Image (cartoon, rainbow over all chains, first blue to last red; front, side, top):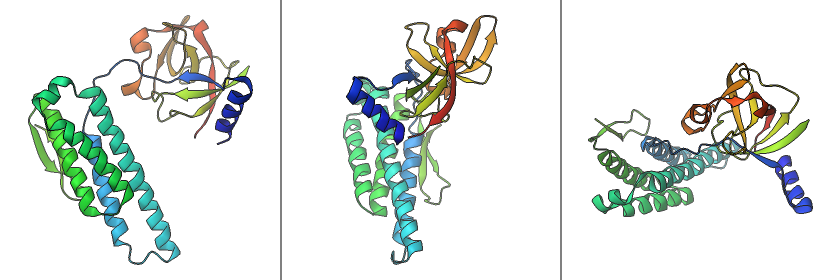
Length: 165
Length: 93
């Protein structure tokens, strides 16, 4: 993008680029929810299914669809990793990890599964990713003293979403 | 009178996202509904928010993405003199 190139050029020739304007949030808002990560996991499953359903990706139309589905899968798996990292870094505290010793492992597992979901095409693998994210969601609600429940997702992917009572 | 700035943060989503560039016209004054370039009254850092209300010499600023914004809800209305211009265009990245 042209402005980025100019910014880099300015940094090179005069040492500073464009000034920065902050559209920021510097107050810990305390608003966290594992819902988004689950929706993202469902999207990854859906994209895997759609990719696998393409018969022979030789026609232009099929190549186009395959490209779009793959792009969405990539983006959503990466966004999922971001959501998990936010929960890990900003929400979960030491006492949560003490109370739920499996939490650390589940977070690492979700991050690795999401990376794997970007690399490969496998509905089964993305289902495993959702399962891990759901387990994290259950722990999340327990840390808030709320009872987690599984409800039907109502998405084309079927399955469930973990919310609280 | 005109300046290009780089956006940091996500408090103005969906209007502008982190990494976008904005064209600011410094001769365009604050008006209700406009997105402005202003000085954070606490540390004089440059911020970008939308004008929610103007009363006498005070301007109340709000981020479009209220869940992730530090604005006049936290630091109160700012002086009109701390509004430096209006965001005229956003260049997405």
